[in-house]
Image 1: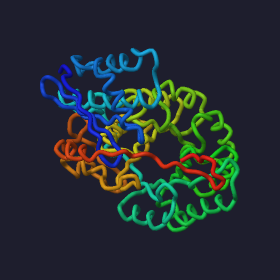
Image 2: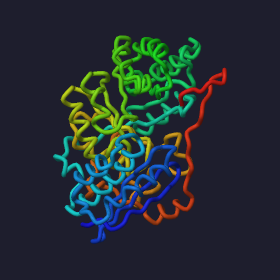
Image 3: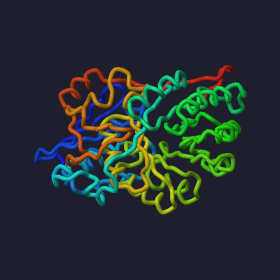
Length: 382
């Protein structure tokens, strides 16, 4: 079980895959990526390689501690994303060695299927009603869309009205048959967030995501006075220390750790357990590839307070390649009535099409998120 080799692949639309091979030939896959910083995360993985080669792949906790605490500087999206991808691959190896899904090694399943939602609307939301109909006809019972495009610190009620019109169009057609989550994407500052939350309160929204940037975490407590809608955040928080205030101070109702950013599978399991003790739900962030999604589902199946899973099948980012393209069995994620059935194969529960990965690595990508500016030329949050 000694780790012999690490290989990294940059594959479209915007992902990095990691293959870890042991001396005995067991292979594990991980997805170490920060969207828009793929080359930087790859460099971080390679810098960590010396701490991993020759170690037993069974020693996941100790390897994690060495990678995270062994350097004087720790935390942040680049380091923890590199560690996350390595950790996912080690769990994949361990599961295959013991012939068990990862959730069985973390306490066993608490559910036999996991609810998922589909994305609609794109970066600058449009055509949301038609796309909501498509998702509903595909069997989804929940959708998520961005609330708005660029928004200034203090902006117009015309933009507020356009948000409400989009939500009203969907809710008036589907009522409560289709749950709707609204992602503010950290684009909204406190003055406008208060207005939007108050106005959206009447629409039975499933949750509001990132109403403000998480750097302004104290604002979350204030925003709760303006709405009864559950508030969610966490995709830009890393490790349990990055979630500590959000959880212990009750700033949010839902946390959204990303298993390719927050520290991996076991670290996110610890974060979810912290949240459970404070009656906070978990909805893992995952607009990424099949390895990240499989890692999330392994967590979901053994985590009582996980209630819905983001997944990127058909998301607007996936131009040219999508989640299922990299799998040997494209039916591996059994989508049915807005749920994914429990994964039963060992490790992550998926088989990566390595030949296709190597082919697409030659294509690669250099994905960057857009830079947005307001009408006056000042920078806007994307």
